[in-house]
Length: 285
Length: 285
DNA sequence: GTGCATTATGTAGTAAATTTACAAAAAAAC
DNA sequence: GTTTTTTTGTAAATTTACTACATAATGCAC
Image (cartoon, rainbow over the protein chains, first blue to last red):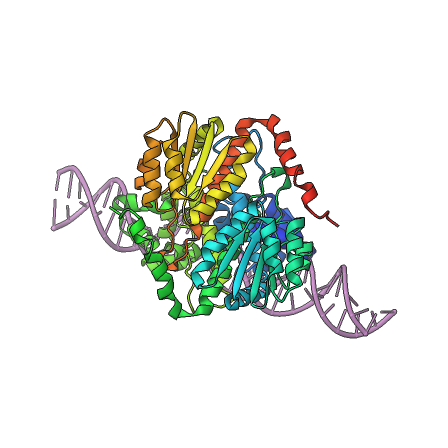
């Protein structure tokens, strides 16, 4: 019983794969979702211009047991307050609107990414990292911060992790790579020249190239394993926001994957790392 | 259409003023509110040990037009309140389950945070940053990566931004602060000694202390303006994940706030920064 | 306490809504 | 152009919710 947090987004996304009358129902619901939660099946069927059983079939297609159950899920989804279209911030926005918009966008990006997770690539990447002799996380700009975050996460697994923001260091380290080394490149566009060049250099060694980037990009093509993320970044926004969040969560996923790989016996090790911080904090009152 | 934010609380409150069978219905609903939203009127009547019209009268008493409408309101109320339970990763999880769990947790954290956004503090922080002569972002551990990310965001506003991960640098910079300097401290716990000490030092100057941390923590107490985030981090997880995401989105919110402050005339400046990266990328095919 | 009035609750019937089974129509494949 | 498959609608069956009314319970006066 996975109650979808954003049913409208799911409907929107599947719109293309629906047949004619189901699409009519979908549009009727997307146009007036609030109304749909209060309508009877007859009313909705009339609004969509289809028969009642068509509406019923539509509901079942989206995982509901029937029309009432669907209405319930829809109402729940609407109540959670996430709007399904990404909402750009306008200059007319004030403190009451724009923070919520940004949160909605972030939530939406995660929802979308969750639906299209490249599980195979993720499993591969976990394998590579778990066995690696050394792992280098390379990114530039915003992705450098993501790489830094990855370092903070992965050192916990006794894997020697390295991060460098300097492209020259990245090149040199790539050139000196060998078997067992994993180069993990992070880039939203996958087109940053110096990063792609570093990947190219690393590729000529025995090292493994893993990348977290856009599908079909130059960087993806240089990689043995590419975790491609689908996020349509609002390019008008000037600040990349959502892609970075998705990248971070995917790195969390990879870290969790490695933990699971290490097995239950590994938890004391993680606990010891955590405990090491105890004396750096003021005790909780 | 006053959709009560917390219908269950209203029912609870009026429990004393209800007559016998209505009270039975109330208890049945309070005991299993989720079930109630999925039950038919007959099922709920049976569960409460009363007749169907009693349930119907109960619904009308609480402002609904009938049973279906009541169920809708209840579902809405439940959805906006408790949200979803966070799901911890187990060692028995495989690639098909744990990535989705982590995404769900992340989404949840953002949903929860969105509901409890401290808008006043955010507005204050935007004011401070927008007018600042210099802004220092200080964090340690995972929060250092967040601070680094903040630097990448805020330099775009012509505000001199600085980040330092070295606690000694943080202390010294704090000591040398003056009017117009903003110290922005990032810490999930708000109890990291060296960071709190740096805040204390900065507090003795004319600088403004802003913090993104837990309410009531030692760090929060040293701050002129504290943006407190409510995230219950799964402490068994050993890796802090969700709090960091929320911090990042809040920094996005602050950045957006500063952009809005700068006004429409500022967009060319942002566009110029973006364009400066054009030649570093391979063109889109 | 008894009878009357008022309120509370349940019964039964009715209307409405939803679902199922099946048939007609449309689309796709051969 | 026919057959097969898929899609859609019709009509009947079933479930669900509501209304009107009857009965039971409660409160109050005497």
